[in-house]
Image (cartoon, rainbow, N blue to C red; front, side, top):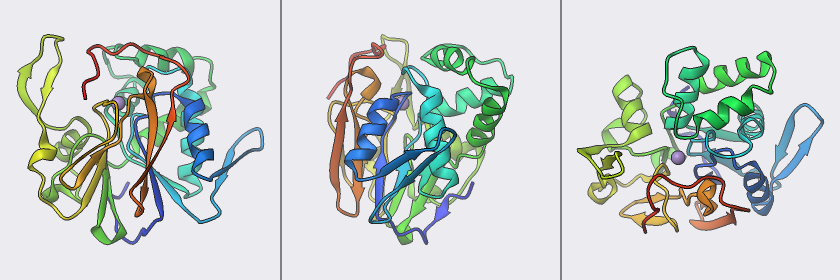
Length: 254
Ligand SMILES: [Mn+2]
């Protein structure tokens, strides 16, 4: 699970938090020009311009089709057409599958119910996949970094337990808001680096550029949309959620 993929040049399509929204992912990939074939066992995904997908993580939880999202993304990563970084929900599902005592909340219950219909071999494959997700990745000669929640220049291309935690949760202020959730520190406002950072984690109505960063988590599972950033074009392409799958704990703010 190397974070340093600077030799990977793209073209890329970076996709935000999916949270089990398979139908929207399928539609978005089609809209982006990917061909999706399924032989009954595996997906084979191709693109006429040899584009690649990078997922910002949070593939799982809350939404209706977590196993199908995992099946498609795992097949894409294994065939080399996609890269996926670790999200906090992916990490928690991994710890659950490893048998750790995790709190079954925030949509993990949906993943567990849906995965109960899958074979032991599939769950083993999922666990192995989740256990090897990198905390972030740096591509295109260091010009572009993808991470789930937050990144610092000093962490780029490195892995450690504390870097992993920072990448998947981002910094917090130490305060708890009146919904009982940690207050997230607006790290992007302080970012001065030359590497473009693309991330998700905090759902917002529309993608938001701050300095040389962009948040592309447009809350699909909450009835928003699933967004892709094309790189290097910096074009945004979205697929609207077919319905509201989950009501957020706190209102989504612009
Ligand atoms: Mn998320």
